Structure formats: structure tokens, C-alpha cells
Length: 438
Ligand SMILES: *[C@@H]1O[C@H](CO)[C@@H](O)[C@H](O)[C@H]1NC(C)=O
Ligand SMILES: *[C@@H]1O[C@H](CO)[C@@H](O)[C@H](O)[C@H]1NC(C)=O
Ligand SMILES: *[C@@H]1O[C@H](CO)[C@@H](O)[C@H](O)[C@H]1NC(C)=O
Ligand SMILES: *[C@@H]1O[C@H](CO)[C@@H](O)[C@H](O)[C@H]1NC(C)=O
Ligand SMILES: *[C@@H]1O[C@H](CO)[C@@H](O)[C@H](O)[C@H]1NC(C)=O
Ligand SMILES: *[C@@H]1O[C@H](CO)[C@@H](O)[C@H](O)[C@H]1NC(C)=O
Image 1 (cartoon, rainbow, N blue to C red):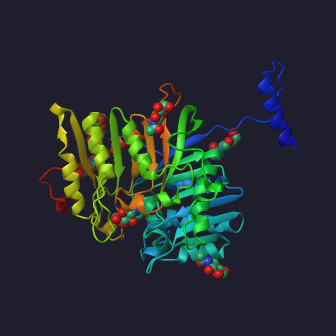
Image 2 (tube, rainbow, N blue to C red):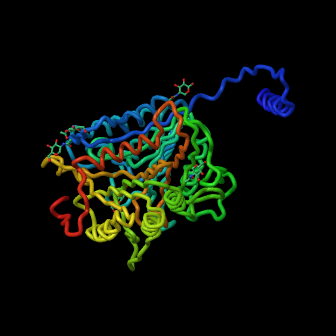
Image 3 (cartoon, rainbow, N blue to C red):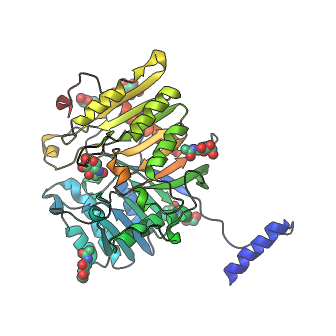
């Protein structure tokens, strides 16, 4: 009743613009803080002052803040040495995360949506969490869309969120290069990410995708009507995109549309750091060409003379066909005609001991930064991730130039430039042979 009266008073006074508006004793909402977070693999050193808190610290912080609930959307769980059959001291951070979360699972509501584990995937972490009181639902993406649940995000107390490239894997904290963002004290955005979580949660119990989605999953915030709020005291407009399109309730911008519109909106540069980049479907049979993103990059590069930089990962498991397409893109370079697309490969070096860690030592980043926008996602950039795989992204638009703190956009740009200029990155040349590099 009191809440209702507060709102009706507020309404009445603001309508009548009463000069004697009473002082209401409701505190202002706490300031919203956004923090970029990173995992820098053991041994990687940059000659740069650009550093950010670790993802490990961010996850510990979020668990420390939690009072009532933690919801986690995840691809798979592999947080211990046991899971990978290793004896790595650097697994200790992952093990700490798992134990802390298990401990909290008995005390508050911990819900985990995870892609249905396939064959040999370890399930010890999920068993431990389940036995500790967490609620777990497996989402059978293979049956639902022929894809996987590839999303990685956290929603804490319906107030704080984390989103980014890191999997629930100890290697994502110490042996794989990752980037994400944490937003503290932002119930509006947390409620919106909560809707994407609830969609996975519902699908965890279901063998089909609702169509249309019930209105409780709909959102008001998208690329055309983003949420307006100050982030670190900078006026910003923000929204969350989601894939695949069949998971998007009314109002939700599909992830691909979000990427294309961010590119369209750029006026001077587009910097992209993603692990995989392919103008094809990666997992479909028969093979299918899929060039929505590739065409958009070439188009804005040509029509608007936007400077395009792609920083792509090269490691032992990279499919060779990727290099042919990257060379093709990198050949769109002729400063005299205003064409300026450049591609570099980022290699995370590994000592003989680090080489023994399976599926590690790679740049797993999935973000884009333009002269206006910071886009932080969870998807590889090939067709499957926008057609059949579940992923999501945070899109932050900060055009305001007066700001007491560096904007997220400028921070992300600095991360990109640090990596691009580092000696871990190598230009893709026409005759380059990736076998010598990675
Ligand atoms: C959220 O806001 C409250 C009130 O201003 C503040 O005490 C708290 O430290 C903030 N939380 C985080 C994680 O920043
Ligand atoms: C580090 O960066 C500074 C300034 O950019 C440069 O002068 C110096 O030579 C660099 N050192 C190394 C080891 O690359
Ligand atoms: C650059 O690479 C060399 C070896 O190739 C290494 O010794 C050096 O530490 C690296 N420097 C930076 C700043 O990454
Ligand atoms: C969690 O444990 C219960 C039994 O306590 C079991 O029925 C359920 O299948 C388990 N769930 C998962 C996801 O392992
Ligand atoms: C970013 O914000 C500006 C100003 O509000 C708007 O014109 C522009 O379309 C936005 N860009 C994107 C990609 O949403
Ligand atoms: C990204 O692509 C690689 C190679 O296809 C795949 O192994 C990986 O699961 C995908 N994404 C992740 C884990 O982010």
C-alpha cells in the first residue's frame, strides 16, 4: 500500500508540477557501475598500462555480493583438475569458484541452465552442485535447434550481471584469454537478462520452443529503444541481444541484427576480436556459405571508408579454411582508394608444460568496438552461432563525449589496441603459412 501511495503521489505531484513537492524518503537508486574484466593466460605479458580486474575476482565478488539468488547460463562445466585429468596448480582458481558456489548452493537459490552434456563431457561439477542444493536444468539444444547452449552469463540477486566469453572452465581463468563485463547495481538490465535466463530455464523442461513466447519474456529494450541510464556516470544506452532468433521474444533484437546495426552505425572504425571468423556455417552438412557479417564489413569498408581491424585467434585446432577467407578479407586493402581492412592473428604462446593442457592457450575473446559502441558477446563469428546456437551480447552505446571516467567504449578500444600492437599478433599475409605460426 505504501509503495502504491508513493507512486501515486509521485505521479500527482509531477503532473501538477507542484512547487511544494514534499521530500520523499525513498533513497535514489544506487549508481550503476560497469567493469570490464579479463583473463590473461599465465605468462602473457603486455607492454601496456591497460589492465582490468580478473574474471576470477569478478566471479568471487559476485558470489560475495549474493544475498538471495545466483542464476548462471552456461555451455559446460569443467572447473577442476579432475575434469581435465591434469595436475595444474593454475586450476586452483576454478576449484575455488566451484567450492564457493557449492557452499552458496545450500544457502541461497542457485539455478544453473546448461547445455545437455554430450558423451564424454565431465559431469562431476554439476553433480557436486546438484548435491549441494543447486537447481540444474539441462537444455537439449541439439534436439531443439541442432545447436548448443553457448551462452555464458550470471544474474545475481536480480541486480548484478556478468556476461562474456569465459566458460565455466578453470582454463578460462588462467590458461585462455577471455573478456567480459560486470554490471553492478542495475536491476533494470538484470531483469532483462533474467528474461533470457528464464527462457533457457523453461526450455530445460521442454521439448519444444514456444512460438510465440509468452508476454512475460518480451522486452522493451532493443536496438531501436535501448535502456537509457548512466553507466559509471556516463549517459549510455544499453540493450541485450540474443540468438538464435527462435529464442527472441517480442522486442528482443536478434544477435546478428545487433552486430550488423553496430557496424552500420560506425563512422570511423570497427575493431573486432573474435576467436573464430568464418563466412560459412561451421557445423552444417552439406556445407553452406553464410556471408551476412562478411558482406556487411566489406560494404561499410567500401561505402563509408570505415577502418576495419579483425584480430582472430590461431591455435592448433583452427580449421585451415578460415585462413583462406581471412586472406580474402585482408586483401580489401588499398589506402589510395580508401579501402582499409586489416586482419591479424593472435597466438597465445605455450611452454612445453602448457602445451599439455588440452584445449587451452588461445584468445577466446568475442567483442567488437566502434567509434561509438562496445559490443560484448558470447558467440564465435560463423553462421551457426546466429542461426542455431544460443548466445547473447551486451551492447553499450556511449556517444557522450563529456565523461568523468573513461567510457566502456574507450576502455575496450584500449584493450583491442594493446592486443593488436602486441608481439602476440601477426598480420595475415597472402603467402603466410599458419602451420609455422600456430
Ligand atoms: C550498490 O549500491 C550500494 C548503495 O549505493 C552500494 O553500497 C554497493 O556497494 C553497490 N554495490 C556494488 C557491487 O557496487
Ligand atoms: C614498451 O613501450 C614503450 C612505449 O610505447 C617503448 O618505448 C618500449 O620500447 C617498449 N618496450 C618493449 C620491450 O617493447
Ligand atoms: C615479445 O616477444 C619476445 C619473444 O618473441 C619476448 O621475449 C618478449 O617478452 C615479448 N615482449 C612483449 C612486450 O610481449
Ligand atoms: C539432481 O539430483 C537428483 C536427486 O537428488 C536427481 O534426481 C537429478 O536428476 C539430479 N539432477 C542433475 C541435473 O544431475
Ligand atoms: C547510438 O546512439 C546514438 C544517439 O542516441 C544513435 O543515433 C545511434 O543510432 C545509436 N547506435 C546504435 C548502434 O544503436
Ligand atoms: C568456438 O569455436 C570453437 C571451434 O569451433 C569451438 O571449439 C568452441 O566450442 C566454440 N566456442 C566456445 C567454447 O566459446
